[in-house]
Image (cartoon, rainbow, N blue to C red; front, side, top):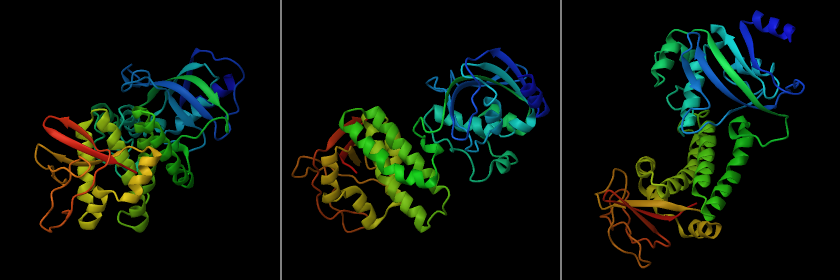
Length: 351
């Protein structure tokens, strides 16, 4: 232990043991999953982040060793710990320069946002030297004037490779593409069982997975467009779940952005949901598709309709032949209606 502490000091890391762990020290081969709580503080005691109180829950951090995590110093110190151990690690500035970006992502995740939201598409070092705000005053200050940080880490669990299912973020690109259809079906099954919150998480993970792959492609290229088409049904399913949970404005934002994206026949196809896929989805128990908004006037990028189709649901009014208008009533089956502040949202079975 003394030899390990000496090596850490030579690397600019000081370890202070707070509570000893149990058992033998793991060899930590690549692929090992470590689960831990952390608290990040400035040297004056100011707390920046605490996983036990971050966001709406106290979920611990999970890390797969050997996956080149952006904050490499965490991997370095974790391999010196036994399961159950708690220790302070004071780390020199050279180890903490990327912490503002890591913290921003972790804060986003804790409130259900995209972990890459607010970050530019460039490497971490380039972001450090940019003047782009991270959306948090304390992180902006830390990014402008990097300084040593104290990481208080409580190692909860050490799982050897092969003893757990990989999280999406830890998968290779090929594994992610193969995983998306599976997680999509899991979401549909959960929705059918009425487990809306869990279905929402499945759809969200599928979207995040595809978005991560899409960031590596040039917007507008064939591969980017293919991924975008895969995202759309997942996003509509996610919106249906959010609608049932009362997140109306998020639903409106997502669906309006989708209708802006498509024009003419593409938009008609998006809204109409052809008979074949629709029947298949009803059989598989998938959620409904957000259809239109009426009552408070049409929203940008949406259709307005107040009629009733043969099956008792609303349908878009017949247009005059302009772009994006529908020329015939659309039969709506199993439509669901939600009203909020004068706005009526209708849903259809979805993919």
